[in-house]
Length: 76
Image (cartoon, rainbow, N blue to C red; front, side, top):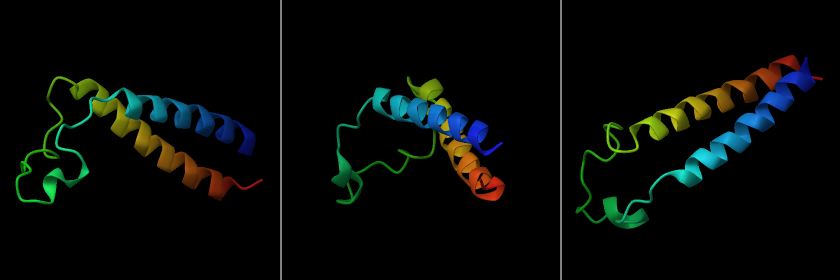
């Protein structure tokens, strides 16, 4: 059982990495929200042009976390 969960975990990890790399970068960079000039709605909605990819990234991230917990519970 552990190895089945492990293989699914590796597949989800690769898909999550690809989904994160395919997203459009923000032009303001990492410090854009720290100088007071960043918009407050950056994290509120994901209904922009890349809303579907944003949603898939969230689902893959949650799945990755749950699979990590499941691997710990199942053990070898």
